[in-house]
Length: 297
Image 1 (spheres, helix red, strand yellow):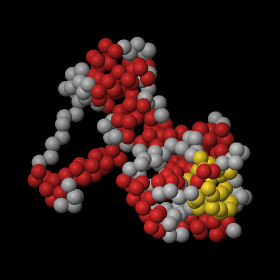
Image 2: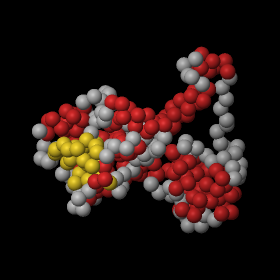
Image 3: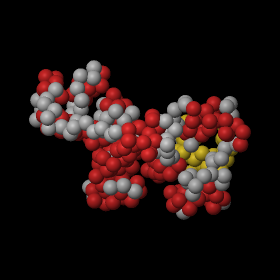
Image 4: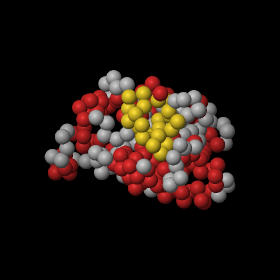
């Protein structure tokens, strides 16, 4: 029965989707797993679900695909004491089904405690999606880190190795994203929209929320100053001393730019041979920014 369930996860999916063997490792041999057709009214979202589900063109396209071809992959849920089923994987599919008026949905039901439920939620999402917002990565890392902390106690080295293995990343990257959880909402949005560099965001995360709000106002709302890694570091140092005032923030942000990196320009001749690979200059700009973000992160 369980092998049939795992096979259902791989049926009619692309290569980037969850494979049956990887799902078997997530569920564990002792987990009670079954399939069912559930009423949409019995489903509820997971309270700590860290991934955004936008009602955009991609969701509309998914909804139309489900309307024409059916659900390619069942969602994963766990039964709750109140009679509802909590969605662990498939929030976008569920929303798409609601969008086209479906009243029932195919589901894999697993009996899982909170730690296992969180692991399924995070792992399946990372396996199925091509990219994630920095805030989504940060929240996912924190959920998993907190769960591991409960079991490993003070064994930080053990937690670090588990995090590195499970997310295929480095210890430094893990802790950088964990710091993102200390950003105020406006700076988090700026980070997600690529207006704020990850390394700079980490430095700003050490500021108090009121200090962060002042930085956002001066840099993004009023566009009075540019923000660099050095300036962010100075703000962090001053804040740690416990005396970072609004005047201090103004002074640091408006400081001498002589020690900052100069603006980098490319001539049209230098990039002409690459332009044909993109549909538009905006696509090319997006690709360059994505490369730089991954490189400096």
